[in-house]
Length: 314
Image (cartoon, rainbow, N blue to C red):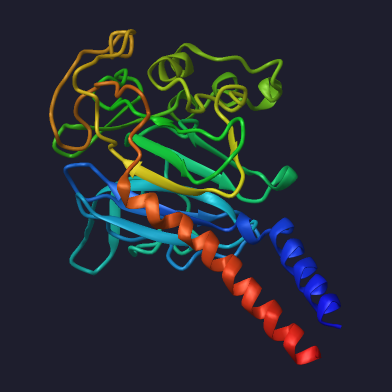
C-alpha cells in the first residue's frame, strides 16, 4: 500500500511538472535610465490581467511581477508622465489612455518599444520578442533567467534611436526634444509600410528603407510585421528580466557607425537624446537572479498539496 501510494504521488508530481508548473514566470523590471519610467502591462485578449497593469519605476529601482501559466501579453515603458490639475495621469510616450497610472486594459499608444510574451505556447515553450513595429521610445533588453532551449537568449533594442530618428518619423516634446520615433506605418498610413491590403502577406510585404534602418540599429528586434526569422525567441522554464536603458558598453561603438542613415548625431542623458548603439546584449542584471526561485516554490507547493491529498486517501 505504501509503495502504491509513493508511486501515485510520484505520478502526480511528474504530471504537474509536465503540464505547466514550470510555465509560469516572474518578470523583473529594472530601470537603468537616468529618469523615471512608468511600465505599462497589457494582457492578450481573453487572458486575465496581472496583479498590476502600470506603475512607477524610479531610476535604479527594480520591481518583480508574477505571471501565471499560459499568460500572454506585452510590456512597455512610458516616459514624461504626470498628473494634471484634475488628477488625470498621462504620458508623452507610451500612454495607455486610462487617465491613471494603472493602464487597466489600455494599450500603448505608438510609438513605443514593446516586449511581447506568450508563455507555455507550442511544445510548452515561452515565445518572446522585442518589437519596433509600433515604433520606438526607449532602449529595452530582455534577458531570460534559468531557462533552456536552443533559441533561449537575450534580445532587445539596445540603441537610443530618438536623436537619430529621421525627421519625418520623429516625435517632438513641447520643449523641442526628440522623444520617440514613429514606424513608417504610423507616420504615412500606407499599405506597403503597414503590411495591409495588397501587402498583407509575407511575400508581398517586404522591408522598407525605414524598417531596415531600425533593423540595422537593433538586429534582434522586430522591425516590421513579417520580421519573424531573426526576431522571435523561445525558452522553457525561464523567468525574465526586462531592463530599460541597459548599461551601454561605452568602450565600443557599433560597427555600423551607431547612427541611422540620414540623421545627425546628438548627445544627452534625458529621454529622447542620443543615438549610441549598445553592444553585446549581455546586461544580465543581478536583480533578476533570485527570480527563478518562483519556479521552485511553485513545484514545492504542488508537492505539498499532492502529499496532503495522498495522506487523506490512506
